[in-house]
Each structure stands twice: as C-alpha cells, then as structure tokens.
Image (cartoon, rainbow, N blue to C red; front, side, top):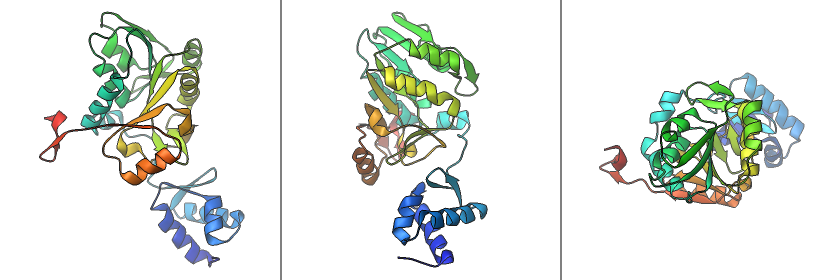
Length: 268
C-alpha cells in the first residue's frame, strides 16, 4: 500500500494517536515502503512537532520525557493506589524479606502491611523508611545513595552495591509506564540499573502500576514484562489493555476499588 509522502505522514499521525508508540518496521510493512523511507517521515514529523523519535520508532508528543511533580502524583488516583497497596501487602509472608522500591504506589504497600507482620524490608525509599522505621518486629535496611527530591528516592553506585548483596524475597517496584510491546519503562535512567538488580535478585517481583500507567511509555526501558512475576493494578483497566498485556506475558493482579455515588468509597 505505497502512498505519497504527505498522505502517508497524515496517516502516521492518525496511527500514533491510537497508541503511545509506533515502530518504524511496522509502519514500513503497513505502507509497503522501506524502513529508511519511514525514518525520513518520522524526522519530518518530529521537526514539525507532531511526535518524538525514539530508537526503533516514535512516541506521541504527549509522552512527556519528565514525570509529573510528586505532589500531583501523590494525590492522583489515591483510592486506586490504596487498594493496590492493600492487595500487595496481602502477598507478604511472615518473616520474609521484602524489597520496596520507590513511588507513590509502593509507599502504599508499606502503609498497608499489617501491624502484626514481622520481617525485613530493604528499600531505596526514604518515604518507606518513614512508614516502617518505628514498627516493632520490622527490620528496615536502606540503600543510601544520591537522593532525588519528591519521592526521596536513593540511587547511584552505593544503592546498586547494596541491592547486589541480597538475594531472595518479594520485591514491589514502582513504574513510569507499562506497555505490552515495549515493556516496563521509567523516567530516571540513573535508577534503572538498581531496579534491574532488584528484579534479578528477587524470588518474586511485582510491579505497582495504576491503570493510568498501562499503555504509557516513559523515556527509558527497564525490562520486558515477562521478567516480572506480576503487575498489580486497579480495576480501571479496559479489556483490550488487559488482553494485550497478558499476551505479552504479564500476569495481572487487579485490586477492586469500591465506588459510591461516582466517588471512590475509600476517599470518603
């Protein structure tokens, strides 16, 4: 289906509105042209402000290279994150080792651990430390390292060495975006090596991602979805997204959020 450049570029813009990323090889097959031709199209569209090129394709221009401010994320989808935190906390076994990553959803895991739970928590989140440090029977070890404002996330070589020294346990990870084709992505490249170490060294690894992050692509890739034990999300995801993620090898654990009169019951 070869087309003139102007018409083809209009159709590429239409296609990228349907999903956050398009791949150059898929576009080439769709239009019956070479990948080099598609790359020229993407360069022209990027210069026009219509999309942003990335390795292998292009992102919608609304796929921001930076994360929303912490305070805005802290209050966004709050009931969903609480429900997810409660579900995640129910997976924690007595006397096991938990690894709690950074992020507003992961903090909810710490907040919902039963008061009777006993065990060890490894974390690179100072917010998680604040939730758990005063708990009897909970041993909290923090990675240290360079601290990022807002989430109070620690990273760098010190944090990587810390997590490299532990094996086993259940990890709960934060996320920037979760896409069936691209996998788990994040906004902070310096934190990605540490997150990969956590995944590789954990017996189980669960990703905390509310439904607004499903299908979204952040700038830097962490791993494929089948590297994770499961994705904990909320019941706002649609059937098509769920099927696409499961088709990519993801196991979904869905937290139900009760709603009353159009409002989240948990927020009342």
